[in-house]
Structures are given as C-alpha cells and as structure tokens.
Image (cartoon, rainbow, N blue to C red; front, side, top):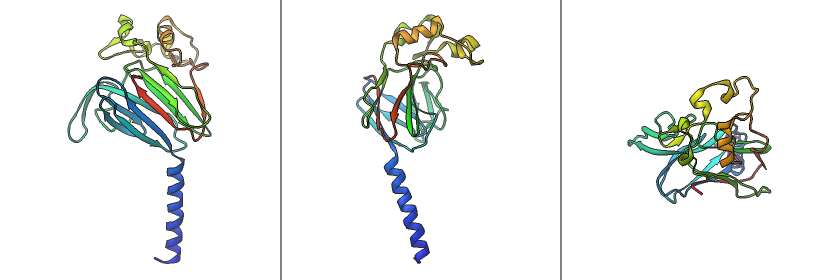
Length: 221
C-alpha cells in the first residue's frame, strides 16, 4: 500500500469512526405480553418477543424518521409476509412507512432533536418514548387502552383509526393547512395528552432534546 492509499484509508477510517461515535442509539423494548414486530424507518425491522430488545443506531442528520410496532404478523424465511396493523409493504425489514393504524414515535436528529408520539395515523400499541442520556429528562407516552375505548366509526382490526384515515376530509386531515381540533381528535388527546392528535396539534406535543442524546422506545410500558 503506497502513502497515498494509506492516507486515503486513514481518512476513511477516521470518518467511519466519527460517524459511528456520533450515531444516536435507540433502545427499543417490548414489554407487551405478546410478540411485537418493531418497525423503524430508517432501520428496517425486528421481531421482539416478550422482553425482547433491539439496539438501533441512527445516523446524525436523519429527519422524518419513525419507530412503530406491528401486531399479528407472519413472515416466511426471506422476510415476506403481512401484519394486521402497521404493515410496511409485506416486509419484515421495512423500506417505507407502515400502514395505518399504527402508533408512531417520530424523530429528527439535527443540532437539536425533535421528538413526538403521533396518533395522526391511529393507534395500535401503547408506547413510551424517553431520553436515556444528555440534558433531557422528560419522556412522552401514550398508554391508555384506546383500542378498547375506540369510537365505533374508527374501529379497525387490531387498532383504532385516526378520523383522517376514515373520512379523508379537510376537517380531519388539514389539507388546506387551516384546521382545528374536532370531537374525534379530542378523543385521542384526552387519553394521550403527550401525543399529536391532529396535524396542527404541535403546541404541546413536540419534545426537544440536545444533539447526542440517546433514547428508549418501549411498547406496553
């Protein structure tokens, strides 16, 4: 290996080490009494039996990311199949967002990390999203039995739909960018005040933590 090649190798190695060191760690845990198929975009997916843990590293600068749980899945040996809720294109290793209804832990990793729990695509599993390091101590959660209390018009197999999914109107989906809470969005907000219940519900629903903070996502906390 000549000096030029060695220098390029050294630079690449240092850059790789820096990237790994700067990655944010997400400790994803299943405390449900049944199996959950965790989904992450980016990140893929993992089958988690009761008590199972998935340590996921996410690169700095990642935006529009989400972690969610899938229920009642069956996959073959190559990872193709289907889930009753949260299905992401019939794949164990998700390459896109999952289908509603699914409870979402959303995040963007920038100079400051923006985090939220979203019910804008409905609810299928209780979830907690909390920091485990850094100068951020408050977590957010949605743990009420929303499925058991779900309004008849929003019920779905294994979950509870957001009204936007069911009615697809501007009133519920905020397509024009000008909308407020509705009786149905208030149903979600009353039971999970930490979570987004409709698209403009951002005044009290976003958690901001400093860059470098690591996190834990727990299903059925």
